[in-house]
Image (cartoon, rainbow, N blue to C red):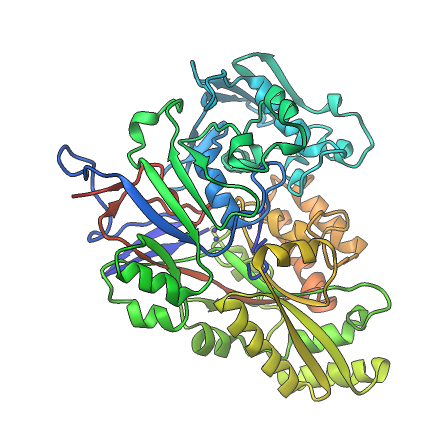
Length: 558
């Protein structure tokens, strides 16, 4: 999943997405606008030059797909590394490198057949062994990736990542170069969605091992299975370039010849470059949304995402105190945050799970509606908890708030600082602003007290959010532990996985424990994404999962 999302509505001059992963404040569905979306590519409509330039809010982290974590990097990963399946314009999983899949009647066995003549960007054949290698690499303790839990439902995979069984006992096999078989422990309706994202893309074992420690450190030590290849990139780069992959099986459908990407942290800089014609796509927020909402290139859609305040609950520190966490969780006015500070279409969020992630298939009730509100703004209750915290910890408490050093990080952290210091007299908040990728590493190192972060779903699985606080989760940076919570989410994704009513009850109870009983995080808002995009660019996809946007079928029109 990514740290840091369906329905379709057309509105005047806006693309609105009503949708069903870590950015340290650091998310997508599909929609269309009759003024902005091309109908079909017709002869004569494509410009002679198919080169564009876009912005990125942060540099890339890692392009070893088993290790990638943040949505910004995954957006590029989705262009470079295609897996068995991919998303169509409506975020429905469709065959990618696979020709088809045969799913057993009980939903436990997936037999994928690969397409004929699919090749890596270096001309080597892509085989089922490439998937077997990368999936095993993801869960092997010595090479484990942060998203290894995504394969917990594969036979023996969880025991393998926990070091309890050898990797050769995993429920994966490659009977031939074209056949890849997956055995699940429980039926998982969302499995093809999970398979459609780059964390389960193939890797060529011979190539990876030949590169050794240099693998994925720069664009020259990578080979690609997707519609684009990468050039001019290394781990320190603020710029990089995507170019057509001539070996891609569907290369004729890829129109853009070159996509130059520049890291631009300041939104005003991106807007100026867009207005001067030097940039074709840039993200905007806050005051700029209102200012440019009538621009012909303005695009907006609602994310399925939870941006939140996280606590490091390390024993012996102030935030190990439940009363302090509860005080903080009820002292922030989320309505004012979204309406006055963000003012970009974001909505207050009073739960771990954002709206429109998942509906009960039997009742069509959205989980957010079913579970109700948690962590609601209530100054009186906050101050009652604050007095209890002071009795335990002293009258004055000083905490550091880790944030990204971009525009959003600055304004949200200053607002949170003001709310907490105003409503909890004696609490001092200092802001620790760092580059976005540094924020991710600092959280991984557990070297923080409070942090602003966000989580964007990698699939419609509710567990993708609840896993954040599982005792053994790679993303449980704040060291949360609750055996009852762990038992409930385990039951929800296993024994009750195919009984929606029981599964919803499990997750509702777990959410209440996490947020109301233990105040392990403070959900703040469900974000919206806003862009200025050259109106001549047609065919961009905005998926529910995997990327902010996708340029596979995009092109410049005359």
